Length: 220
Image (tube, rainbow, N blue to C red; front, side):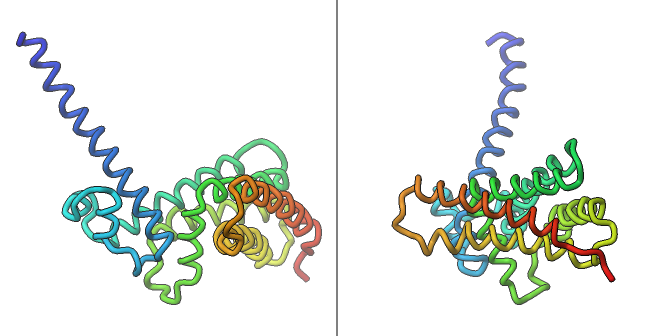
């Protein structure tokens, strides 16, 4: 082997190792999201995640020090992707109303494409222990809520202080429940039926969002 080939091999090997590590980490996160979404934090074990990812438990621990660290990473990644979609909508051109409605569309589309994220959020919404809420809710989750609040008050500066929260919770709650609970209640329906149902939900939810923005009154 020539000196040039040896140098190229030394350069390529770490890169391939890094890429392989990134793929493994992504696979762990994908499997963990599926199982945490299905069984909740307490119901999904590292052993089950390792088995589904077709690796040994110590392999999981190489990338994530504990089950809690893995869960934090899963929730953080999911909330981070939702934050980015909200940022795209709320920083785009158009009036505050148009941007808010665009963020609603992005929200519905994101959870329709990724129902596991909806399940994770629903699990946390029902979490009775505030100390157990993932740190990501103080990061991307809080930033997303702040962006929505700012756009809302840009549109309705004299609205009641709580109205932005009621607007957000109405839209978020309707989609979270539909993307998780309602689809399970309608089990047995074909994929095309479920997709059509989600599109119909989006249409009706957009009407609801527009109606809410029309009906909200300034604080008295």
